Length: 119
Length: 113
Image (tube, rainbow over the protein chains, first blue to last red):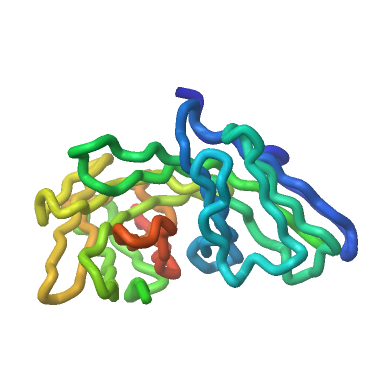
């Protein structure tokens, strides 16, 4: 079990540029989540996938944001036309759907995050 | 809608003293509750979770939390603080109807020698 990995760990970009982040979940985890964390705050939910289907999107996910999870494995989060307000830590988490008869909650395991700075 | 309130953005204790980090939640359905710890420039690590099996939950690193429905609380405690416990702690809630976690704003724990 290698854990959730994210790439890059740090990204500095200029306002107006596009950026893309990658998340590799724990092997065989079928749910994948994206969160955003700004300085001094707790993470805020952006979106989640079950296998390749994007099942929920937060109002925080504006039209400039798009996430994909082709083939239900890794996921990418793209931000177009970045703004200074997009500067944050972007966290990815993965989980495994509990089996039948098991307590009905999944535990989310987080990656180290990608810190985005928009100049 | 779910929400989490963490009282005290900063808590300072002496090494060896009791750690108490407070968390109150709001949920319209039976909640699942979590405590995560975050060290500088790292992701979140799960400390423990409440899933209705037992009201007193034991986690890693000597931490435990007690679910009190009447008080809508899920406070985190540790009998004796270590220097290595210095970090940011987040309480989070979810429910069976919504998978996403709703986090509190966090409590930064300082441990004084």
